[in-house]
Amino acid sequence: MTDLNQRVATAARWSLINTIVRRVGTFASGVVLARLFFGPYEWGLYAVGLLVLAMLLSLNEMGVSLALVRWEGDIRRFAPTVLTLSTLSSTTLYVVLYVSAPTVAELLGSPEATTMLRVLCISVIIDGIACVPLGQLNREFQQFKRTVVDILNFVVGTAATIAFAAAGVGAMSFAWGSLIGNVLALIGFGLCAPGMLRYGWDTEQAKKLIRYGFPLASASLLTLGIVNVDSVVVGSVLGPAALGIYAMAFNMSSWPVRMVSETARRVSFAGFSRLADESPERFAAGFVRAFTLVIAAAVPICVVLGVLATPIITFVYGDQWAAAGVALQFLVALGLLRVAVELAYDCLATRVRKTLMLMQAWWLVTLVPVLVIFAHLWGVPGVAAGHVVVAGLLVAPVFLAALVRLGIPASRILASCVRPVLGGVAMGVVAWAGHRWLGGGFLGLAAAGLASLAAYVPFVLPVINGLRSGAAGADEAPADEPKLAAAETS
Image 1 (cartoon, one colour):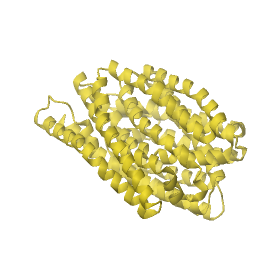
Image 2: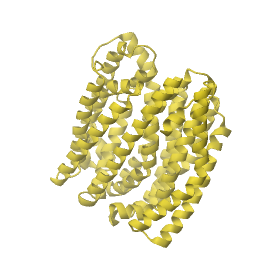
Image 3: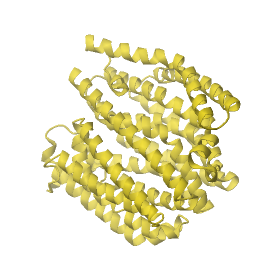
Image 4: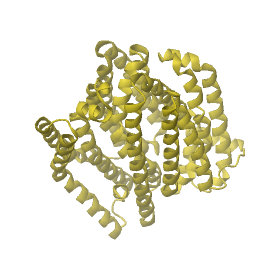
């Protein structure tokens, strides 16, 4: 158990570095593009491309690559079958997209996005191939190698995007830059996991892989439908310019999800998979510790973004994006809920895959009518508010009940939220007062943010100390709860 803890801890450290470097870089490049080259309309076209790409990526390898992380034994025996399956399914999806691109773009209210869809979604085939060596890296917790490749992908792809934008290519700059970076990443992952890019076929293995992966792929597709149906509604009801405003607000609200959730999720599924084979007590304790950490880390980001939404947007991106402020205030609440739900998703995926698919379907079915009604009534802010209403009132209780059925007490989950929530309230008051007093310039926003963070620390510090003491106890007495969350703290 100690060896697993050390491997997860090391992987989590590199995953955190990976996330921070890429998110800071994404933020900086987004500022450059939004201020110098693109307005809401171009951003809306890119949002359409990302929407379609995300949907295809959720289903392109049918979930079979997750078997590389979860299944016992030598993965090289079935990796060739995984590669063949994922490549065939990804290529088929791309061909369908290529043919239907004009219709898809028209339905999303952006017929000008047709060419972008055809270029950007070539990445679906690349991902179908790269998922196999990437699966081995995740299985072995080799996040250092993944970090190197991901950062190289980002640097080259972003540089290409900015160069194309400066040359006047327009919104297509996003597509070409992304494609160049993804090709480079495929080469990098292949070099980091030698021998994994080898095609082969075993019919019995293929049947088992599909039975294992399809429920997870379906749940993943439903998850992306949940996250992206709002873009469909905004684009079709309100148009590409409104979609650009909404996409900017949604991207900013996703900062806590990307910084906290992505860091955790690179190791959480593999870690929960190991714990699922241990005792139920270890499994439950591991989830509670991980949940406590991610909530404590996400709350301050969400609070600052919510309270200072409009001044942050106008300071960073310019006055032309001010309309995204109200939507951002709602969407940061969704971001916090997503951090919690995505960790629960990884936990449930190890034990109840079919139930998870039904839960995601419930979320999507209840979300669509609410978003359509709220869009017609209140526009872009209405769509953001509808997301929060459904996630908070109709979905979160369902996930909580599913976790309880796995033996994870609801009282422990809810208790882990008390101090971060109280600290978040204190942060909000301080941030609001600081902004009112100091104004919305850089110094005012920085001072308000730092003061609010100082108000948060006394509430969350006992939580962090408790996690550390629990980790030390686990080292001394292996029978105690495992250190999954302690690893993720690093």
